[in-house]
Image (cartoon, rainbow over all chains, first blue to last red; front, side):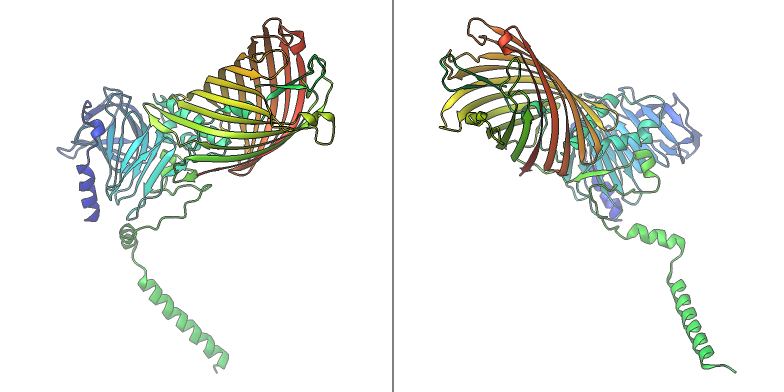
Amino acid sequence: MKNLFVFLAAIAVISPLVSHAADLKQAKFTQIVNSVQVISSSDQSQRTAAVNDVFKMPDVIHTGANSRAELTADDKTVTRIGANTIFSFDQANRTIGLQQGSLLFHAPHGKGGGTIHTASATASVLGTTIIVACTADGGFKVLDLEGSSKVQLPDGKTIDLNPGEMIFILPGGGASPIIIFNLGDQVKGSLLINGFTDPLDSMPAIEAEIARQLAKILKHRYDDQNIYTYGDIFNRHNPPEIIIKPPPDGGDLSIIPVR
Amino acid sequence: MLTMKTIKFFSIATLAGILCALSLQAQPSASTAVQQQQSIPQAMPNLMPGTNAPELYSDEDADVGPQHILSLSPRRTMFEVSADSEYLWTDNALLQPNGGVESTIFVNTISAAYVPTPYRLGNGRFAPSIGISSQWYNYGLGGHNLSTNDFNVQTISLGAKYLFSGNWMAFGEFDYNRFVGQRDYREFYHDFTPVIGLENLMRVGDYAVLATTLKGDIHDSWAGTPLADDSEDRGDLSAAFSLSYLVNPKLVMQPYYRFQYTHYAWNVLHTGNRNDFLHSIGVSAAYYFLPNLSLRLFVNQDVRTSSDTNAKYHAVSAGGDLTYSIQF
């Protein structure tokens, strides 16, 4: 009952970020791995999804074990669905309903972003790549891979995430603090990113964020306190060059810095 | 006939059997266990940097990817204070064309700056800063006459950086540097230096970043030399490349190369202008005892050619520095 209330509360939150965007009610299967079923909402019949099939609201996608699917909308919004996932487009504008499992969502800049509803929380993005995972009993997790995202928690609190940051909720529990995770390791080990033939359009942006985070790791700066200039090694650690000139009249040396 | 020992054994066995039966009776069925697991709030695990965030369900990591925790709850900070102590040896302390005078140099630096956590601005992030620093240069520890030239550098710096998408960063800075002798604290040089630059970070493999930095500056200077006050007016253009490689979680190696072109308004004898071409190549190794405490060792070689034969030089230096910084 509590989860139902939370779900309804989450549904009521519609991000202002997406209010003027083109709608997201259907998309085409562009990649399929193993078993992906589409369940018709009208007669509950099942059919096996195939590449180039069009998936529409309010039908439901159910992926099997070790199975994945990629959907691409007309505006190039990409949704990748992981194994054992139940997924559908929502009635609300540019909104996805994730009942269980995992998905990767990427909306190109200027296309209105999107919102992913789960049983316990909502994630809204605008021109960003995120991964959302959830369980039917209220477990929730969102990872920001590039761009920024906004998370609406069950208690109504809103949290902004930056690239390389995540937050999760355990079933029946509270929210974790914001966690900075190793983006390079996560991307390398994710089938939602690497388990498809074609790379994501946002991969260059993700790679750039990995490089930026690695630069901080190298500087032992995990807390986002500074943008470092790596060329500063020459100014931070080396003294200014000094020219010491013997003056013509034989007096004191003149010390001239040359930085 | 039952012995006392046998009776004791059967008594214990019977009691154990009763306890076991009670225990089994208390265990729920598999389906009940699942229901209880779903209804009982799960305690938040002890999240620590160096561990992984927990999976919500089995095999979640296969699709989502492992979430290795680097840090928790990023916090905004406003100020940074740092102290650095460096000791180096050079084979050409006077930067003379033919080399000759070796020296050690002891450089101590303290700095304080207002450097708020970068703000989101447009599609990027904006990082303003304003700071002051003071450096003490002491020559020839171990004894020779260069120590008469010990001096201090005082700097006020105002700057800003903007990080674009794709890891390009533009930066601008305005520095005021003032040099005073340690004997009488008389100012013998100062300059106003606007700086602009562009930097790109590119990941190379899993553990290395290549930084490319292009920078230009102009030094509007005053020098208390016998020749002329403006004898050190100059402009620099430089291109620097450094590869930072994470050897292990505490050790970073950084080979680097920099080329710098400098145009001076005046040559050494003040009879015309001059153009210098400086090549610097070296490698450093920084060991982080703590995130804010590091020891760095380095070796560097400078080769400068010039249109003025008096300004050519070649120098090798090596040393180490200990840096501590805090942010709040």
